[in-house]
Each structure stands twice: as structure tokens, then as C-alpha cells.
Length: 589
Image 1 (cartoon, rainbow, N blue to C red):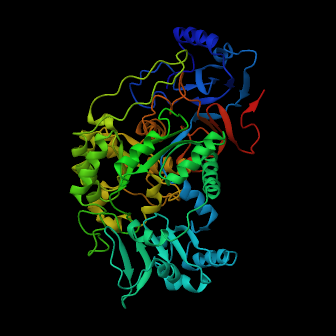
Image 2: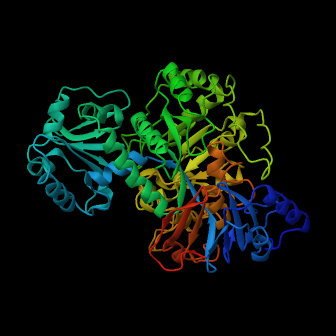
Image 3: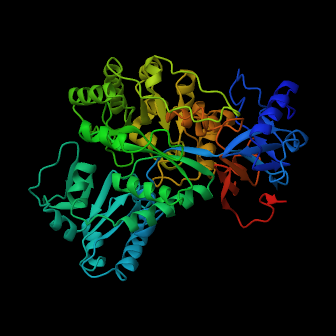
């Protein structure tokens, strides 16, 4: 890594900038990873690590040694001593469901239950306090963690839901369990046909078991539940936002309801939004509706903006609804549930790309990934580049970003998850410039059964982070929160070890990547995936002052130490938005 010292030319330039834009805050005595030089041949003059930062108007003014940065001090500049703590750019989680995460905390939270009995007890406790006639909702259960790994049924929860209609989503959101009252409210009987791309499970007598697979089936129930109030939406979002900030996440790329986006706008208008959001829109909405929504919010808003259109090609491996090219190895009569006809998908993708929308497709199975790539290959022939964000940088701090490259890669189409690929499709990702937006912490959960689902040959092409990088594919990292914890250090650990958290099992170790590659994917590459790589992900002049202070240097920590990393301070737009109770988490002088 480059040393702390700035070049003489850069220091003179920075001093001149500071005369026009004096720093609001200076951070001293740190061990600060700037994000530059994480990849070879980075031309930035900013060193890879520095001791100090100067912040002005929510942006980084300068990065260098303590002595160099102190020269920029103005009479009203606040000085914060980091006491040699490690700091770095804030994490940008490229795939979240923030509203769902918050609502899960307000409902029956089944995250981590280790048995059906534990699940039943949590439901029983919640039901005892519920208002008469109200719906019981919740989620987070994962039957693969239970002895026997058997799916629950309505008969398991009918006696403990006290007559309330109840629906409980599996941790991946692709299966839900409904009790008899909820099925009756939705009109689901033994004669209800399976919706397109979905399934209603039945027992040996032909009666619904309560298990509903994929949204076309689960929505039969969810559509009967009264919508949350704006106040409840804001409360749920704030719970998830606080969780993100406490884990060092300063930006999220999110898929929540339109009403949740409106709640975020209200939080922003009240100066109560302290986490950056790139919000997605539903691919299936009519094109005119999508255009109206896109036009409703300023595209240059650095705190809250609308980005890609999200579509679902299939379900999940855990629920065996991911669409595979060949049947599941542990379920030979099942190849998953494709959500689209290829021709219809390609038509819709082309129309939306021609209107200038970025496309992002959820695809887990190899068949689903191939479908996404087929649609992208047609859409990029007619696509219009999404308008770049206007240059809102301070000319005293940084120059404007370069114009976009007029190639398919400039469209920044994305596959969300990209968990299992046909071997030949790595080349297609590369040639189409498609971003692989992946969640490495999924492997910590899935490796117990992934080879059983896929078989040993297909497993070679699963969660294949290094293969994507070897094919020069942009790899952006996130968590799929609340499917997994929003804790980014679990993802870094998974990416560099491909081991479970106990260190007792390894999955396809040839796909490990380096710490620098993993940090880059979780910061700068995820910013690239939302067209914001010239605004965030690095701590150098002109970039947004979004940084975190940690209790250890994650570039030198062992993998197990990495798992126990704690956040001391989270800073967004130059302002501290989270502080741990630990002393000396960056004290002001």
C-alpha cells in the first residue's frame, strides 16, 4: 500500500481548495483505509491508508498525514481524535428489503428458531397479546435448521393462533405458512388451482397444507391483510435503518413497497433520514406507472433516489423453487418454478430498457440465470442509457466524472443472487457487462444442504465469486436483509474463507476471493451498481463523507476475528449517526 504522505503537488492543491472550502471537521490519529488501490493499477494520488481526513460540506476535502491535514484547520473546524482506530468507507449493501426487516421486528420474529416447538412458542406468546380479530404475521423461520428439516403445516399452528388468521414467511420470502383461518379468508380450498409460477401444497388427501410457494400464491393471502399505516411503515423503516447504521452500513439498495418509499420521502423532508437509499421499482408495473414514479423524485438526490426495476425469475434453493436446468439432486421430480415465459420476459425487458430503465433480475438457479441473460441480450439492442446523475460535486473539491461508456456494460443490468450458473454463462455475463449482485453470507446458511440440492458437479458453479472476477464481471455484495443479518462482516468472512462460522465446513474453496476484493465488492462495486461510483465508496477528495470507525483493522484481522468486528462510529454526510457506548470511539477535542 502507498504510504501516508501526500505528494507535494497534491498538498498544494488541497491547501488551495481548503482556502475556498474550509473543513467543518478533521479526523486525526486514525488508521484510515481510503478505498483507493484496493485493485491493481488504481491511478488515484490518494494513498491507500492515511492518518487523517478533512471533511467539508458533507464531502471529503483531503486525506493525508496528521500534520498535513492540520494545516487545513480553520477557526471553526471541529477536531475528532480517532485514537489510532481503524476507519474505512461505509458499506453499501447492494440488496436489502428494509421495510420487511423492520416489520419482522414488529411482528412474530422467527429468525433463528431451532425447532418447530420453538416456533410454536413464539407464535403462542405473540397471539396471547394480539388484538381480537387482528391478523398475525411474521417471518424468518428456516425448517432446514430443525431436527428432521420437515416443513410445518397449518395443523402445527392452528391450535396456537387462537382463531386469528396467520401467515408466516420462510426466511427467504419464497414460502409462507398460512393457518386455516388465513386460507379461508383467501378462499384457498382443495380445488384452488396453482397460480402461474407458484404452487399450493396439498397433503395426501388433497387438502391444502398451508404451505404456499412463491408470491403468486402467497399474495392470495397477503392481499386480504389491511395495509400498514404510514406511521407503522415509518416505525418499521426506522428500526431497520438503525440496525444498518449500527452495523456500519451507510447505503442500501432496497426493494420495498411504493408506500414505503413515500414514507422515506417524508423522513427525508423532516431531516430524519440518515441512511442513503437507492430504491427499486417493480418490473411488472405498467410502463407508464414506472415512468411517473421515476419522474416523481429528483434523480440527483444523494440521499434517496430511484434506480432499477426488479423482477423475479424464480424462487430459492432453500425452498426448492429456484429454476434449474436439470432436476434437484435431492428431489428428482422437481426442477423449480420459473416465474416467466421467456418470450414475454424478453418483450417486457426490451420495452423497459428502451425507456431508459436499469434492469435487475432475481435469479438463483442456472435456468433462471440463463433466462435473465437471454432477456438482457435482446434488451441491450434497443436500450436507452439511463440519464447519468447530474454533476453535483463542489468544483473546488473534485472534477466531474467522465461521460458514460456507450457499450452494453454502461446499462449496468444486474442479476441479483446469481447463485448457480451453467458453465458457459460466465462468459455471457462478461460479454453483456452484467453485474453479479451477490450475497456471500447466504453461503453460511446454505452450505449445509447446497450440495445435496445441486449434486457435486453443479455445486462447482455455485456461489462462484472468483469465477466471476476471473471473467472480469463486476461483483457487488449485499446481504438480502432480513433473509440474512445486515452485518457485512459475515459476508466478508464468507467471501474470503467459504467456511461456516464454526470453521468446520468448507464449500468449493477454489472460489475464495481476497480481502481487498471482498471490501471492494462491498463498497465501490456496489456503488457502481447504482451509478454512484463517483460519489461514494472511497475516502478521497470530492467523495461523500460516509465512513465508519471499527474496533479492529479488518485488513490484518484473522477470519475469526473479522466475525467479531464491532462498529464504534458511523458517519454519513460528515455527521455521526451512530456511536457505540464504548469509550474513545473517536472523541471530539
